[in-house]
Image 1 (cartoon, rainbow, N blue to C red):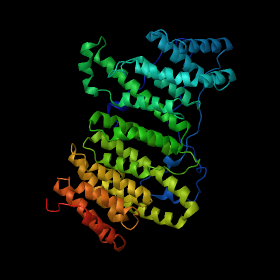
Image 2: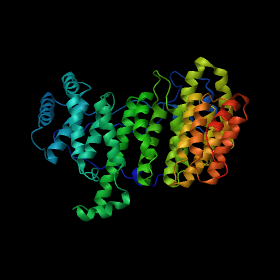
Image 3: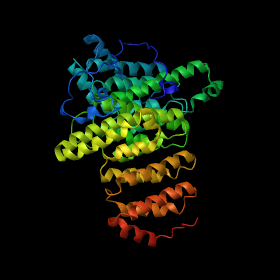
Image 4: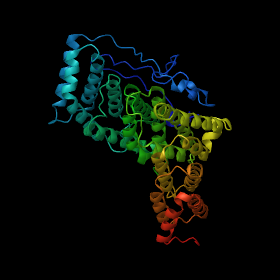
Length: 468
């Protein structure tokens, strides 16, 4: 369902030459699913019965990896020395060869973590310096062309290698998250792919070579994101990734929004297949993420909409799994009712039709969102009404808003806050159809007896120009 012709998804990463030791192993990405029940989820789950949602996405893949042959003690000691010398080289400017030697030495050491305790101690004792060095290496890359070099690609590959050994350079502390944020910004804000030919006028390499480097490095970036989720598949990591991606998912620049959507879709795909069953079983910004992905499903760019649709498909799997686990303890009957309604809604549409019409996403997800998540969804839609560059996004936001409120109008607990935002925004919305949708939303609230006084008090306090 995703856009298989988009630039970001084309082309495998090319071969690399190692300076000191054989490269660390790469895990297989597309392993066949394991048969049998999911640990922690009862076998009688109704989730598998929902039409249009393949059960494979709930099945965890086996954690098999093919490891390199153990390195000899002499080689390991030499790699330790190379890494340590580079980390102490603050008084001189390393060449590209020295940078690549450092990164490839690190990657080789990642494989030795499995069997060599001194290497584990060495990495843990130098992890702060390593994170700082990786940050500096990326900062030294030319702004705007940082992916058109081998260094950036090697940084991503090194981070991936260590993630698969459960050593995380991007999560767990402020300096690591700062590095993560910097990487995302550098990748997302690269010039549009179609500008590469113009960029090559001032560079010595051909446009075909630069496009190949871009594809290889973006693929390395995606694999880096996937490694974070596969080896540590918990909702805290999804929260961090979403926090860093959120603004880029709403970028007014098409190429930035496209890259962010591709990246988020890949994260959701991996998480849907590898979601860990550790506490907490709660993603505190689920309503916001559902809303943003729904808006992107109505994006004016077809490839963005298709990638968002695939990501939303996997997000529904994640939501079903989380709600099943939590409702089994709280209210199994309410979940069965929600699943039945979800099944009925999906039964009317094929997956393609379902996700090509964002309002249907609101219908299906609404049955699983609690009051806090409903509030997040509404606030995100109200923010979407400000997207004046893309009128179709404004229209989608208005349609999603009224659909959600119509289906869940009795379950809102934050109507005063919602009405305050609506009254403040309504006076500056000029598009007649959008204004009418917002006014219809107000009418839905006021028609519920328990909200009538709240809504009327807000309407009387704000000078809302209904006659515009």
